[in-house]
Image 1 (tube, rainbow, N blue to C red):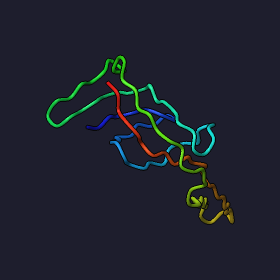
Image 2: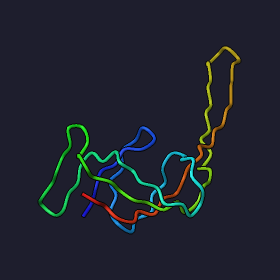
Image 3: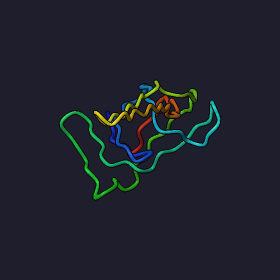
Length: 103
């Protein structure tokens, strides 16, 4: 059984027991959270798609850790103008372990 959830402005396909990294969530490590924005639920060939959400469907997850992702390097250059600009960015994330999918 799998579900498509929405969190942090992105969509993720999850199944029970998986670990995923999502945008940072304000929750403590070890805390159980409930994600109620479920867009679709599937079990083999049987798929329920919401309009836009599946009513009554929830996904429970446990916060495993918080961290920062890999550095993204930004380099801007204007040729022949002697202009170079370097920037870097590391995005915060929360790692979740999916517990159960309830329909």
